[in-house]
Length: 189
Image (tube, rainbow, N blue to C red; front, side, top):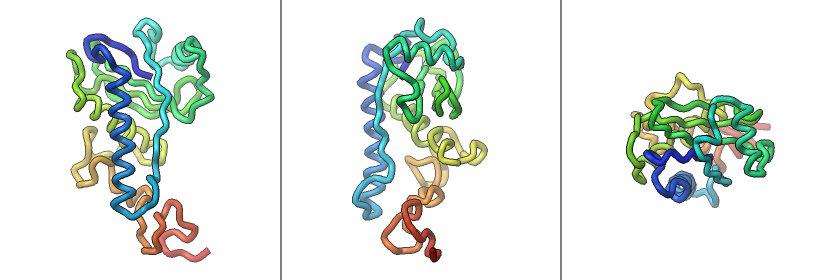
């Protein structure tokens, strides 16, 4: 869900957001290809919804989010993760992984204090924050392990940390990434 704030989201926020989401999937496809995998280990399939600011008076309120979704004839329980992008020029805030409307969620606020229409690069930064950082918390990454909000200093861009720590690399050399390996890290059954 993207909240349309005309000053920041611009005239066509969904097409900009869809493009940024596509970049994230391209990152995972490139990673898979570079590691010799037949397909990406992670693929995000998205259903996007544009909300007007008045539809979501309290974006941190689970009931308000659920009501906004239901007003569009959708159900929060039909989705694995609810993602809310709310670049409100009047509020500077970061992001969080948690629960909204009873579902696992990712929330991204106006972490860069934008007051102008977002560029494609800004949308990419928002997508990296949402999918490469905040989504990682649902995968077990700890919030205090993040070296920076806008990327990493460790050379693992575009990922928040080394793919090895998520089990995405073939550490034991058997041709299977550890997260999918029946004998991960060369361990016997």
